[in-house]
Image 1 (tube, rainbow, N blue to C red):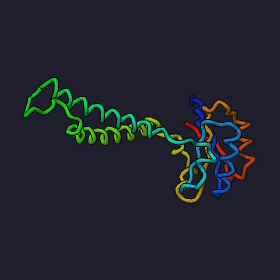
Image 2 (cartoon, one colour; image 1 turned 120 degrees about the horizontal axis):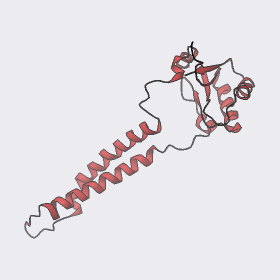
Image 3 (cartoon, rainbow, N blue to C red; image 1 turned 135 degrees about the horizontal axis):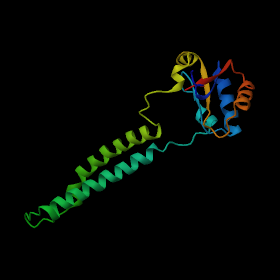
Image 4 (tube, helix red, strand yellow; image 1 turned 90 degrees about the vertical axis):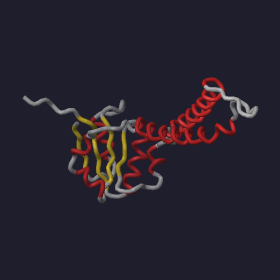
Length: 179
């Protein structure tokens, strides 16, 4: 006996960028939170239509850079002033001028790692499987179709109400996507 498959969401197919832009604005105004738009190319104004705010990846990069700079300065201070102090010509045990180049390089390195790690964390990567990739019609997104997907995990999701909402737009095809 086969179990009923779990439903991931409901997908609507559109033929023009204007149609999907209008649908995205209406879905945003309805109050859905877990939904996305898939297009074959970037559409100017789609971020605003979806209500997307600035990315948080910059904060990961900033904290990675601050950590790198602080680590570099503390490492060089520890090695020169505490762990292995060598008095040479009356020079100070620690000088931020000589410690700046390695600290700067650590700033760049850990800032880049922070950006990459933050992007992967926020995108929930690495994800080895996505239910949309099983949908045959979704393959058209790389050619000439535009798709809007509303997930069942959204608090406002109701299959009948969500289907009515998507039918009220100029969508060509609507169907459920299974996990």
